[in-house]
Image (tube, helix red, strand yellow):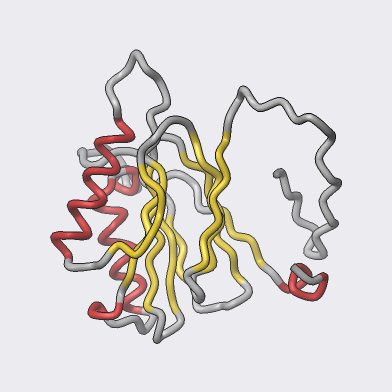
Length: 179
């Protein structure tokens, strides 16, 4: 990526229970997933899209924002907000990421999240055009909603680098980047 592109790129992290939509071509959405799932959704013609990040497929929570942790609420919220921003339902396309198995001794929450997300989109008639679900371990995800480009990197504890990684270029916005 050129220095000019890096200077104008805006990184927005989407945490657990959050979502973000944009039509700004300079925005890259990021998240880190384990057993959680993120849906990346966009309307390629309208140039608007977004990402959500949910922890569990379904459940009832207490408090004002407790529902945001659950897939059913997170999926509806992102779909509705993308539509409010000018997208058309019949043009929506999705990518799904996450749902990793994090621990051998516990029930596979990641599999349940992945199954839920695929079933939800099938029921809504929204095609899944890419992504990476299930498997073992976590993922770091970068998504550009206006183009649909997505990059994924495995997050592992066992990786020992053979050589020191290159020093990252400074980010002009003053943000701190951990990679």
